Length: 427
Ligand code: PMP
Image (tube, rainbow, N blue to C red; front, side, top):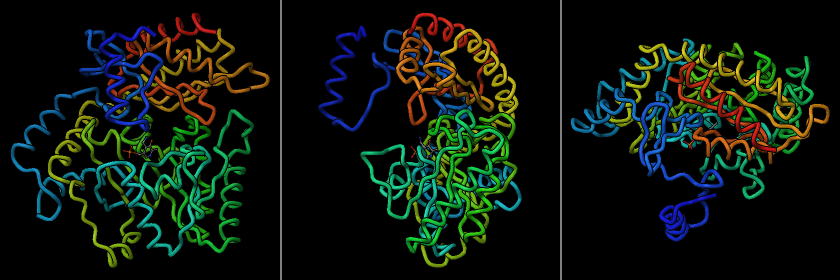
């Protein structure tokens, strides 16, 4: 790469002061100083089309959110120990976007915290401790959540109460039996927990299986697995940190694709469009036991400023029809990338829902052997050409394409032209 001397000095400063655990993206790291709409701008003023950042899902620095935060922080920034109308207004507005049964919400600041809380609630409700996840799942960063985030392995050990099941990959041999096989895998995981004297508490999945490689199809394949965990006395937790808030285009929540109602749902990332706010939405009865025994006070979770930011996000999604936009532009984007795959056999599979697309690189279409090197070269070439994406999947061979919900067809065409060039220029 051709990193400027200034940027090189900053990379060294980072290592010195932030230590070794942080990772930068791209072979030539970016020095980003500003964001606006679908673009990020580097220190030289160069614009990058951001097709990766699903936190700034309304676009970077959306004026409605900026204004809501600025206004509220000048009026009151305090916690949930006082009566305040913003938290109530937002909680009602948020739960109104869920099926009727999911009528209660608790607030936190990060997706990890939401998943941590969801598990505490699930354990209190079920009396169990066992957790079933997919084999490259990521659910977060705390000690307890990292223990059921196998994508962090092998550096992080799974908990003794955790069982993994193969990710439901249609492209790799799922066929028409995918749902039956996934159900059987979850049943086997539950049986193994029992064999070790562990009562199952929960099946938790990202309903779009982002870290497993973006696995949207076929619609409805989760139903059997959810039935299995429930009949074993456990609950189903839908992790909507990635697919939630309209990204899939067809619905506000990814679980709708599977035509089921979860027991608990966790939210984060785009909820505040950059402001840290997260939540657990649930059936009220699920929280009875936890609520009776535990007190829950999260200093910043649900504070007035977070609620103002989150309210602005939800209002904007609804007012600007961003879910419908995600569906329409997502379809256009997916079709464009599929057309590229027609001429590039290295793209073994292109799949997606709304504005979340996965494009899988393979050595050839017969063997379907994952090609992480080509995926990485395309990502880095696209970055040089001014378009930002990344990779996902256990083999790091799936392009993770996740533009903001305000993406236009023209943005998608630009994306496609750059991806076409990157495919032509890499081997
Ligand atoms: N769940 C999923 C599916 C995620 O992708 C992430 C973050 N990548 C988390 C949970 C954790 O969220 P946070 O980083 O806000 O703690």
